[in-house]
Image 1 (spheres, each protein chain N blue to C red):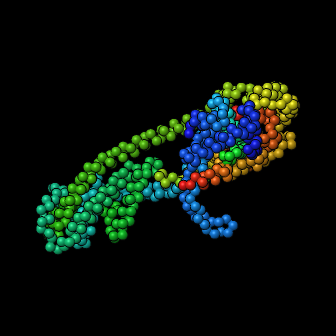
Image 2 (image 1 turned 30 degrees about the vertical axis):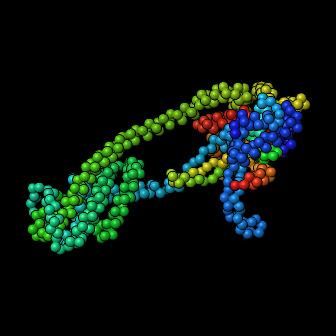
Length: 532
Length: 94
């Protein structure tokens, strides 16, 4: 359909349009070209308002291959002239794809549920022990233990002894009281070097454990609820991942098992006090240990203060989510059902006919009658022809020859009959049919059938009602191909039919909730048929 | 270069009134736009050729949001300068 307008053809058309002689038109275009080229080269930019902008860009040296010989050559730096069409022109040219927007590609969707499920599993194994056994968050105990493990294996043995003892001992009055760190001035004789190192390590350990606690506390209100996976936001998932890493790290150290529920059941404030009782026995080592513990204590206190805020806020969020989640979805479903019912029953009456008629008068009322589904199809034939011819004449604003007019009047009549035959008797005529292929879409099918992709609207209008979403047609649907002249030589009636088809598609998009799209097809129906 | 300047230069070169020049220019721009809208190729002597071409859809990657986007197909206007313009560009140097 696209034609090539060479220089003389363009000049001729321009001369007719502007009402000037061909030589005048030629000199005008030449002068324009000269000025634009001159300005573009001298100033790097030239604008023709309402058409576009020419800009000069510089291209650096680059390596290329000599076509034919295959040698690699260096293409020297040069200038290039670019054209950028005006926004309005670009939109006009692109009206076929106007409605399409860039859409995101989801490549990682498959992974998410899996990891969520995994995390969910972990919440169960970790919280089950602790929820029952420890009413108080046992960070401190945990830290003392970890620290010992890091410092010296003897501490582990020590603790085991302590544990064994405290099981039989009565409880002590004051929990978790340590001496001030004056002991640091008298370093332990046994191992002075690991001391400094250990204090660093213990801080890290404290933080790690702190995090672990946080996560476990968060998990508690979630476990056992079916909403677990849904409520867990990304932040929590991330934390869980970190938690997993920590676990694996500690497992590598050979003490991983201590982190799990077995340990938590052992840890109790009374046992730490047991270490205090044991002081005289291993004084040197324990003093050293306590100096580092003091720092730890401070760190933990500060973290605890923060944590209190964090955990309470997250708990609030979770409970809030739960509250609104169920009624929210329930109301959503109800709304959907109601709206679906409404659309099914009244949508045609509310949106369909009245809406379209308001927009484009009588031409669309003929669309309605062309539809195979409409009830009254007998008395309309003369009316349709009359409306159509009247409309066609009014729409043909361009000067048309008298002979053309008389020809098209006859053509109109025959086509009106033909259209009605195909639409009312639903394929009893010899019109061809084709199967819809979703992989190429209506657009490309129209390209194959008519040689012009934009005529897909005719295919759609012939085969579907306005309740069908044009972007969502089932694969393999049998389509009847409407007979039209070759694109570029449309009769007035066929133009009218194209206009109707465009409005039909617009209505279909309107029903599918794509308002912008509907608008663009509606506006296309005004000018596009005249270009055929 | 704005429209007033273009009209000014055209009118002096063609010894036409500014009103006439403006009207002719408007007609010419309208004609070119109409032709392009119909997906016709137009050749303007001394300047170049304008044609519409369909650019296929492609997958773009946004490094900031780390997302892949499918950019829809688009009909664009392609400009090819004439040999004369290309020669002038070469002559203009760098």
